[in-house]
Length: 149
Image 1 (tube, rainbow, N blue to C red):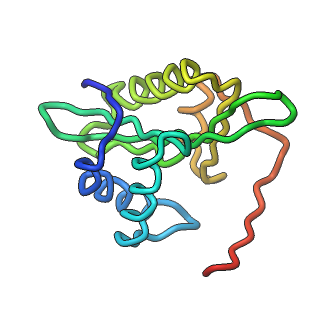
Image 2 (image 1 turned 180 degrees about the horizontal axis):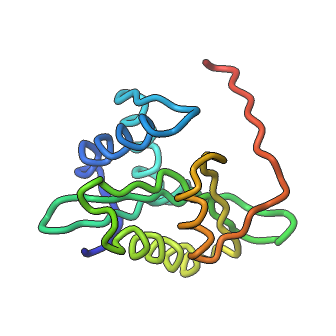
């Protein structure tokens, strides 16, 4: 598998992966129009974030987003890791670990001093996956405010 930065040409394949991801997550449901809009916002402005894709035989089989912000505690750039998904046919081969490590390396090279991610609390497999990669559980609890829904 090769990893690279996504481009706008990848949006259809990324939407397919997001449909898989959002059908698995407790809090979300797929909405192609919204996913296309969100992907385009990221891909058209690298200061907002970047998307790393895993590609095999010219086909996108995995993705992960890195969204950028600033930590006033650390006094520097940090990243939010989102939308980590591998196509079902690519699971169990170590490719997810390869994609995650590529994203972690990329974020570090871009100056991120910390990466944060969210995953479903009941998804034991995902929790173990991220913990094996060096992520630790935080005592902080995510809260959401959704004025536009």
